[in-house]
Length: 393
Ligand SMILES: Nc1ncnc2c1ncn2[C@@H]1O[C@H](COP(=O)(O)OP(=O)(O)O)[C@@H](O)[C@H]1O
Ligand SMILES: [Mg+2]
Image 1 (cartoon, protein in one colour):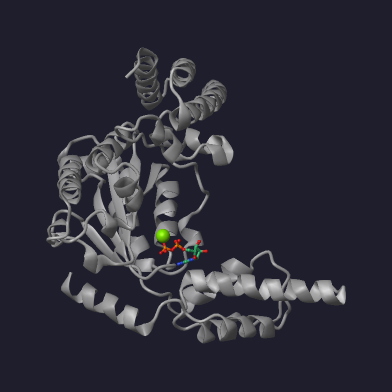
Image 2 (image 1 turned 90 degrees about the vertical axis):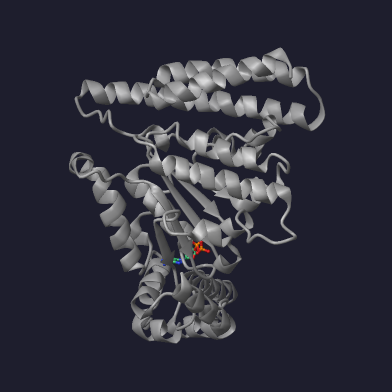
């Protein structure tokens, strides 16, 4: 590995450390240095690596700008005595995202092909109010995580800490990802959103290194949520077919999970989501590994009404739209289905506007037609499979 690249890594490390300590000005400066060395390293390389390095250097420069701006802002806030020294640094936007489509987290990872670097996602603004239903899960998270975070002194006196692992399982489109995002928002936590398939396929051979690096990167923030989607892809049941790579990944994951759940002061929350929990290795599911397992099922009547309401908010709708009646009709549909139905009805209304040159609004009938047109994406068979799995876990 060339010298410039080593220097890049050193300065990136320094930058991350500075960020953690909220020394934002230093973090900005170190990131600029890192970008400078990365450009040098790009010049010394070729092909895809060269392009990725160049691109990533640009991303780092923008990120440094943001840090600089944030440093100025927090200084101003302190001067007005309104500063919040306790604010986690996690809400800094991820550098990969700041350069638009050219700078994905994957691009960041591609720079060092031996192990990935992970950055938190930018804030989404999604809150628990945007997530319909799932009241029990919300209550449990409020009790076990949000309150404990808010009342750290009481919690510490009683030996309680937040962190540990949770697993959300349920059919697709039921709000698992949304829920995790709302959690990060509510806790003001750095949100590391990773798909298991990315860890497994992009850097084959180094997959287990990616797992440990993910936990390591996340632990640099004051409070982090690691959210791994499609987690079954990473934690497959042992079988003759399972490769040694997969074996090592499961072991590394268990070690990381056990490690952070026992270590004092490290505030990491692990959230896994899956549409196929039955594919997960049983060893991973043993008590103590995931403190909480939540079945995220199809929305009930009230939740369906709320999802309709959320999705029709701000759209031009006729007075005849009867949410209660529609919610009844929507039995068996997922939240994602309901969103599709609203979009479909809006599309139809738009076509009519164009054709009639009118100011047509979305009517009850158009919504009913859309329900007719779009079938539930989750079958009764799948619902049953989840219920059975819930029984035994
Ligand atoms: N409980 C819910 N409340 C509000 N919207 C929902 C809910 N479930 C699903 N949706 C809608 O469906 C979309 C997809 O949900 P998502 O969280 O990605 O599902 P999952 O991760 O379970 O597959 C969301 O962006 C949202 O528009
Ligand atoms: Mg999802």
